[in-house]
Length: 175
Image 1 (cartoon, rainbow, N blue to C red):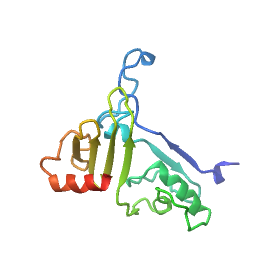
Image 2: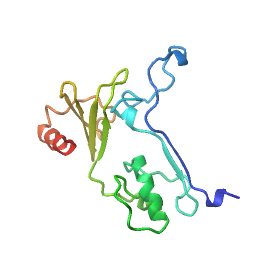
Image 3: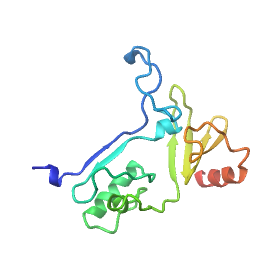
């Protein structure tokens, strides 16, 4: 008798492992196609993860939402769902508007990621996504990569040279 009063959230902390490992018989255990790369990177294959929320009385079955959200949004969502409007200082935003109406908007300025360590194919970097644009800054060589995710969701077309004003604005926000 729990299904009518239990919220279920299914998500992941990062994209799938898409490189060969000894545990996977030296083959990539997952594919994040059509997105580039995977676990441990700031490319879309490492950032985009599944998110399924089943909330009786709030979400409609089979509904889909394309808004950009993050796991930091769960805390303010639960606080608001409990009737509290004053959420303690937190980086997330309440998802209740989206759960009530998947076509709604959060009016979010940007999402930020900071990856301060080394991984087999990643060096310390940070990223910002604002609307359709994502900028990655690598700290070892100060390299900047800019992508338009609307036209290039696979992070393959480098736009920093052709869109210097957007790159500079996002880099300033990221800093």
